Image 1: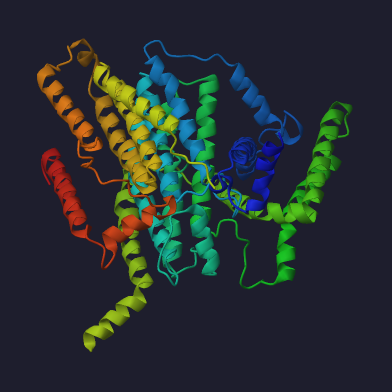
Image 2: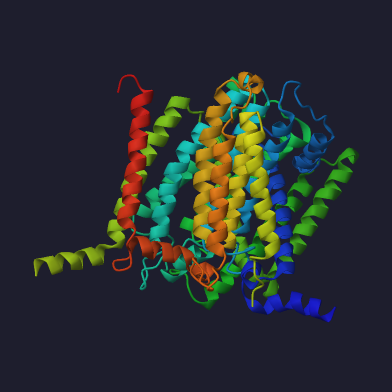
Amino acid sequence: MHSIVEYITSYLQSNQTPGAAGNFAWATIYILLVFVGLSIAVICMNWLERKILAHMQVRLGPMRVGPHGLLQPIADALKLLLKEDIIPAEADATVFWIAPFIVVLAAFTVFVVVPFGPTHAITDMNIGILFMLGVSSLAVLGIVTAGWASNSHYPLIGALRSSAQMVSYEVAMGLAVVSAIMMTSANAEGTGTLSMIGIVQAQLEQHEWFLFKYFPLGIVAFAIFAIAMVAETNRAPFDLPEAESELTAGFHTEYSGFRWSLFFLAEYSAMIAVSSIAVTLWMGGWLRPFPNALSGPTWDLVFSLFPGLTFLFLAALCFYSTARMPKHPLFRIQTMGLAGFGVVLALIGLILFWGPARTRIEDIYWFSAKVAGFMYLYIWYRGTFPRYRFDQLMKVGWKVLLPTGLALLILTAIVGMRTEILSMFQEGLR
Amino acid sequence: MNPPVATAFFFYLLAATMIIGGILVITRKNAVHSALALITALLAQAALYLMLYAPFVAGVQIILYAGGIMVLFLFVIMLISIERNMKERQFNKQWLVGIVAAAALGALFVTVYTKTSRGVSLFIEGRMSYGESQNTQMIANLLFDRHAGMYMFAFEIASLLLLVAIIGAVVMAKKRI
C-alpha cells in the first residue's frame, strides 16, 4: 500500500511528462483529464458555434433550453442518445458499425502528444508531429468506409470528395510543417527536433515564435497550414463532403443517433487537434505572449493573473445577464441557475489567483486560449465565406498551395543555411 | 528507471493481430474487408517498429502505408463492382508454390536465429541498441551527414523510380497530355 502511494507521489517531483517518467498511474489520470476536457470543449464549442453564428447573422440562436440556451448542447446530446439507431437494409453492417469508431479513435489518439505545457502532456514522443499527422490522416479511412458501407449514393459521393480533398491538402500541410521543423534546427548544434515539446522549447530558446521567424517565410508557412487545416477537417468554406444543399449530409447521411454523435465529436476534436498543431508549431505553444517586449518578474506576475481574470470576466457576464433576465415568475429557476453558474465561475477564478494553482495552470491557459482563438476563426470562416466549387478547391490545393509550399521549403533551407553557404562561397573564392 | 515497453506480452499481442489480419486479407471474399484487414496488419506492424525503438520508421509506416497508400487502394476497390467478385471462386491455385515459398522463408528464419553446432550465429550477436530519443537523428545522419551519410544516393535513386512510376501512370491514364 505504502509503495503504491509512493509510486503515485514520486511523479510530482520528477518534473517530466508522465510518459517520460514511465508513471502508469499518472498517465491514466492525464488521459482521463484530456478526454474529459476535450468532451467539455466540444460541448462548449457546440453552443458557442450556434450562438456566434446566430449573432453574425443577426439572430438570437438557441434561447429556450436554459438561460441563453446554455443547456442546449446537453439536451441535444440526450436526444441523440435516445434516438433510434438505424442501419440501412442493404448496408454492410460490420463496416458501417466500425467506421465511426475509426474516426473517433483517430481524432482522440493524437492528443497523446499535444503539449499543454512543459510537463502537461500525456507523453512526449521523439516523432511527436509525425505521429500527429499520421494518426489524423487515418480519419479519412473512417470517412471513406462510412460512405461506402452506407450503400447509398450521397454518402459515397461525399466520401470520395472527402478523401480526394484530404489527400490533396495533406501534401501542402506536410510541406508547411517541414518548413517549421527546419526552423527548430537554427541553434548552435544545428539539430532540429520532431517532438512537440521540443518544438516549443526551440521557440523559447530562439526567443521568437516561428510565425515571425525569417519574415515573411514563417507567416507564409503558417498561412498555408491555416488554409490546409480547414480543408483537412472538412469545414466551411471547404465543407464539400457534407455540402447540405447538394449531398444532404455527405458521408454521414445514413447515420443516426449515437453513431452520428460520434462523427460530430470526431469532427470537433479533429478541429481542436489541428489547431493545437498550428499553435505548437507557429504560435509558441504554452508560452505567454510578448516574452521579449514585456519581460521581467512584474510582467510575469501580471500575465499569470490572466486565467483568473478570464473566469472572473465570464462570471461578470453571467451576473450582468442575470440582472437583465425577465422578472416574470416563470423565469425564476433560470435566473437562479444563471446566477449559480456565475458564482461557480467566480469561485474557479478566485482559486486560480492562488499561487500554486496560478503557476500550474498558466501554461495550460495560454495554450487553450490560443487554440480557442483558432476555434473562433473556424466559426468566423463559416459565417463569412461561401462554399468553394470542387474544381476550385482542387485548383487551390494543387496549383497554389503546393508550389508555394515547395518554394517556401527551399527558401527556408537557404535562409537557415545562409552562414554555411556564404562561407562555402568564400572558400571557393580563395 | 523506466519500465520497459517492449514486453513479451505486447509482442505476442501485436504478432497475433498481424497474423489474424494477414489471414483475413486472403480469406475474405469482399475486397473492402480484405483492405481493412490489411490496414489492421500494417498498423500492428507500425507498433512492432515502435517496440524495436524505431519510432521514425513507425511514423512513416502509419503515414505512408496505413494513411496514404491504403486510402487510395480502398478508393479504387470501392469504385469497382463488388457483387461479381462475391460470386467468383477465389483464384489461389498455387498451393505448391506457396508452400515452398513459405517453407523456404521459415527455414531462413530458423537458420538465421539459431546457432550452428560450433556456437557461431549467422546473425550479429546482440542487437544494436539506441535510445528511443536518438533514432530519428541517427536516420538523418545516415542520410545527410557529410561523413557518415552513405545512403543519400540510394535514397534519391529510389525516389526517381517512384517519379517514373507516377509519370507512367499519368501517361497511361490520359489520352491527350
